[in-house]
Length: 340
Image (tube, rainbow, N blue to C red; front, side, top):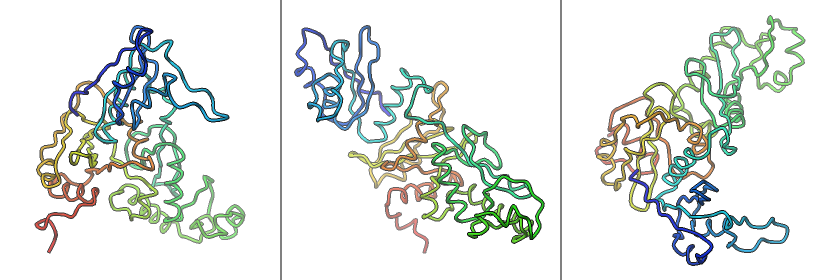
């Protein structure tokens, strides 16, 4: 991302507010209202920066009946810092970079703790469970997901496809085991029921192995299930992805490496130059330690995001990456890339 074109509009008792707001563009972007000594009062992103600033300075439309009074920071506000952005993802990225300088992650109520799925296929009777917080990468760890709700949604999709046991009981299988005969999941046939020997142990572990492979290869998921289990780039060292988005001036490519968005290496290209732009992407690490996991997960699970994330799990081949990016954008591959 190029250097942010921040602009500052000063406020004060001797400054006409309407005239000051005219200097704020009625465009999408990120803004911050500053208080005494340049301290932060509020940060926001909006489709109309002028309207956003007015609403926080007591100059917005009057509240409707039953609504609380509008925020009025005029007694404290000394300036409006703002920057217009060229696409929804660049807006979110700029917002997060500004928030990181002023609001600790632990105080971000909009970014909830993540969760992961765990499945140890080596257990006698494996099961899938939800774990809160960051799980270290490795066999049996899948995710992370934005929060426990997203992880449970993924868990339900896995159980719909693979009838693994949802219970955490220890048991010795036998046909008349009361624990299994009285189980609702067994009665409605949503569990393979190894406890009452409806499925042999070896067969059940093979079922768990297929579920583990399914979770570990999100690029191979069927569309209807993949929509329920959002794909995400792995957390291993060196993991990479490309965020692609159509902007008014072309297609934007944002490299992601080790959970960090490399805004210094972003590229904008016309559709005809997309393949060449992908080969020009840089993957050098950003200066300083950076971890964008929390907000990237929130963005990735947003219901109306316009950009797409293309994980580079299986290949570094430029032609294969170009085909994946074109598919994410809904573009027809070049004629020389289509198999005969």
